[in-house]
Amino acid sequence: MVQVKIWGSLAAFADDQSQVEIEAKNLRELLDGLAAAYPAMRPQLDRGVSVSIDGRIYNDSWFTPIREDSEVVLLARLKGG
Image 1: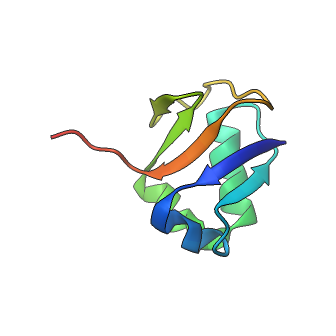
Image 2: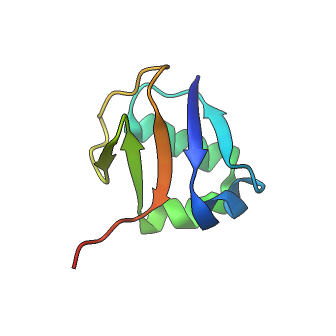
């Protein structure tokens, strides 16, 4: 299981939890697991989110591995400008 910190307003879609556990070995499994466990979060996930894994931000790198001891933070999609 991976501990996932839910940042900011995204926590409202996870039953107001700021941290959840999801079974995942990569980014795609993490997002699929979040959508299955918290259906209200699916529209946000479909729009796009950013995920920080051990301090590095990922957006669409689906097969990025996640270890059980990784620090994982789910964030609203970060956009440059």
